[in-house]
Length: 224
Image 1 (cartoon, rainbow, N blue to C red):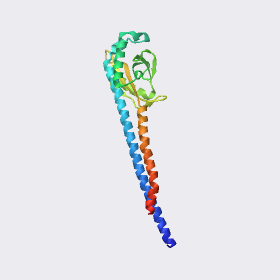
Image 2: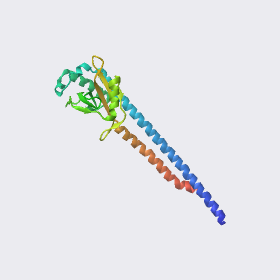
Image 3: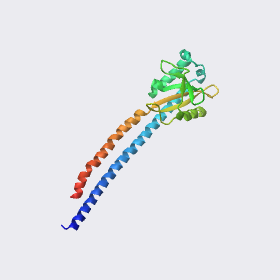
Image 4: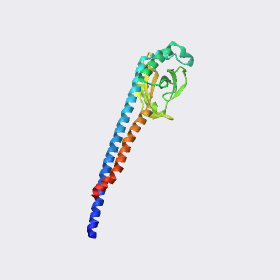
């Protein structure tokens, strides 16, 4: 075989290898793109479900509470009153039905606007009526919207030191129809995202392995 013919054959072989590798890369990228798209879709759906849950729970509790009786709950000594016990029973029923933890649902009222609240009613046996409850800056718009509109509102995803959450707010009206307190229901979404990430990692790993494993046989086929 002449040098020119050998060169042309080698060039065709390299071109075929490049086409095989490119095709495999496109397939792997398509699989990865679909997996990422599926993850984002599931993540957004999980977030919406959590937002709907806390908004519905907060709204149901706010409608079931007596706003006028909440006015008389001012200090921890009031935890023994029928007014507090009645509010606690409402919170406990909603907590159980919604699958929330004891510390994830409570009633607060503003002290200095939407940036700071104080606790009014809660589920745990160790009560803390009157203690201050700072509101995260990213949640203040949702809380203020619920307070002024009179309708339940949910927040976006936010984080504390270790976890990710969404919260629902719903105002409790008094005798004159104006809000006297607000119900907050919290739901942790960290676990949902961790589960989705674990599901995402396996398909991506398989796509990468399939891409790498397909290069040698693809090259041999092109050579043949």
